[in-house]
Amino acid sequence: MSEGTSSTSLPTIVEDTPQEESDPLSAKQAQALLTTMAAMRDQFTKLEGEVVLLRESVSKQQPDIHTLEDLLTKVRTEQDSSLATQLKEVQQERDGLKRELADLAKEVRELQKDRQSSNNELTTLREELQERKRIENRLQEQLDHHSMTCPHTAEEPTSTSQASPALPAACLPTSPQNSLPLTATPAQTSHTPAPTPTSPNSTPSSPEETLAEIVLLMDSNGKFVQENKLFPRHKTRKVWCPTTQSAMALLDKAQLRSPSHIIIHTGSNDLHAQQERVATSLRGVIEKASAIFPNSWIVVSTLLQRKDFHPATIQRINASLSRDCDLRPNVHLAHHPTLDLDCLYDHVHLYRETVPILAKTLKDVALNRIPTSPPRNSGAISTPPRSPRQHPGPAPWTPQPRPQHHQPQCPPHPAQHRPPQPSFRPTQMKQLAQLPPTK
Image (tube, rainbow, N blue to C red; front, side, top):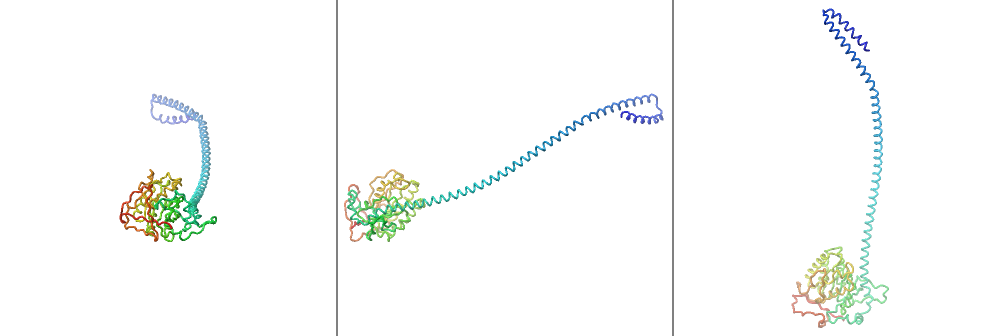
C-alpha cells in the first residue's frame, strides 16, 4: 500500500516537472527541490508506518471492546433479573401484607362485635344487678316491716291491762313523764300485714285500739324500739315508715285519728335518690303534719350519720330541718349527737344496744325533758336539742285535752335532776301537750 501511495505521488511530481521546465530554474533550485521531495517521501513513509501500527493496535483492542460489551450486557441482564426478582418479592410481600391487613381488619371487626356484645351483656348484668338490688331493698323493707309488725300481731288479743303486769318492775316508770311507750299495733294501719295463718290466736283489733294516743312513724332503725316500755300507760302505735313519701301518705286523719303525740323518724332511705333534696321532702312532711294535726305534739327526728354519705351533707339537711321546725309552734326537733358512726353495724343501721339511746332522745323531746346524757365527741353536728322556749311561734299553741280525763300530777323522779321551771306566758314558749292516762 505504501508503494501505491508513492506511485500516486510520483505522477504529480512528474506532471509538475514539465511546468517547472517551462520555467527557467537554476540547477541549485532544482537540487533543493529534489532534496525536499526526498524528505517528503521519507515523512510519508514514516506516516504510513505509524498508520499501519495504529491499525494493528486498533485491531488488537477490538476484542477487548467486545468483551466489555459482553460484560456490560451480562451485568445489565443480571441486574435486570435481580431487580425483577426483588420486584416480584416486593409484590408478593405487598400482597401478603394486604392479606394480613384484611385479616386484621376482619379481626378488628370481630373484636368490635365482641366488645359490643360484652357491653350489651354488661349493661344487661348491670340492669339485673340494679333490679336485684331494688328487689333486695324491697324485700329487706318488707322483712323489717314484717319483723316490726309480726310480734305485735300475736299480742293483739291481750289487752293493755293484761300485758302490763307481765312487765318487770324496773321497766315501769315512776312518774307520768316516763310513761310514753312506742307500742305499735300493726293491724290497725293499712301498711301493716294481716295476721298470718300460722297465728291462730291473733284476732282483729277493736276500733278502740286504733285510737292511739301516741303514734310513731319509724324507719328500719326503729325496728327494735320497745314502745311498750317507753309509753306503757298510753295507747301507742308504731307504723313502718321507710321514706318521706310513706310519711306523707300516713299523715292522714283517717289513719291516725287524733293522737296527742306524733313522733317521726324517717328520711335516711331517701338520701341516695334525693341527696340534699331530702330537706325539702322533710319540710313537706313537717308542714303537712302541723297542718293536719295542729293540736298534736309533733316530734321530728334529725337524720343519723351514715358511713356512705359525707357528714357535711347530713349536717346541712339537719340544719335546714331545724330551721323548718322553728317555724311551726307544735313541731319539735329531736337531735341525736351521741349516735355517731361507731354506733352503726353497717353503713346505716344502728347496733341493737344503741337503739335505746335513740328511743330515749325521742321520748325526752316528746315529754319536753332536757336530755341528761352528755354528748359524745363524734362527727355529728354539735347543735344541742332545741328547747321549746327558744323558738316562740307566731301564735300560742293551745292543746285540747280529751274530755273526762285529767293529767295526774306527780313529782319528778330524783334521778332526772330536772331544773326548776320558771313561770312563763303562753306567748313565750310552746305549751306542753298533756298526755291523758289510759283507762
